[in-house]
Image 1 (cartoon, one colour):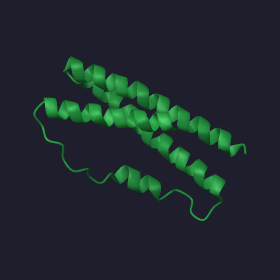
Image 2 (image 1 turned 180 degrees about the horizontal axis):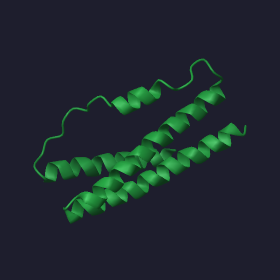
Image 3 (image 1 turned 60 degrees about the vertical axis):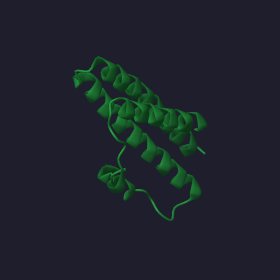
Length: 110
């Protein structure tokens, strides 16, 4: 999990660097309706183990959605540098969501 967190922070820095290199400003984070709606389905008041499984599945779905978005971007953006960047992010996010699924599966067996 620590490796995923470190990689996500590296991705954030890479995105921030590209934004600055291209002359844009980093704006405020906007509310993510997908995440907020998904969060409503997490079980409350269940056992600690079930809550952890839910959080892992929640994280897996968010990472899978990011993977899908980066795939679409990498396939459709005309800028070759950005296309490669998005492809690399897609591959990374695919690894993240499958890792979260494996953790959830293993915890579900306990």
